[in-house]
Length: 124
Image (cartoon, rainbow, N blue to C red):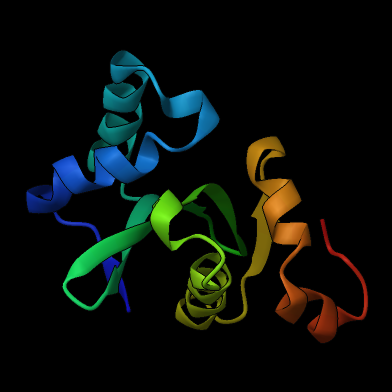
């Protein structure tokens, strides 16, 4: 289940975000969290499986598209399709908007089978 980030989930979100290669240092993590806290166009979501939060998705939303800036899954839950499920759910939350990637998220998004099925080709 994909849930919108709340300040009470900050430590959990920072832990999940720290699995991203460019987000490992505390100062960088704090800067990134500040962007999500202060800018309404930057939205953070957490994936809950059972009682635990095991995934994180960060997007920047504009009028016609949204950009996936962060996608992270707890290493002990990788390979379960959680990342793909988060992408599928965010596309449902943002119908009619084109999805973009960053250099850091492009490789993962190109592996999402639902995107290839939908368009017949990669869109990144």
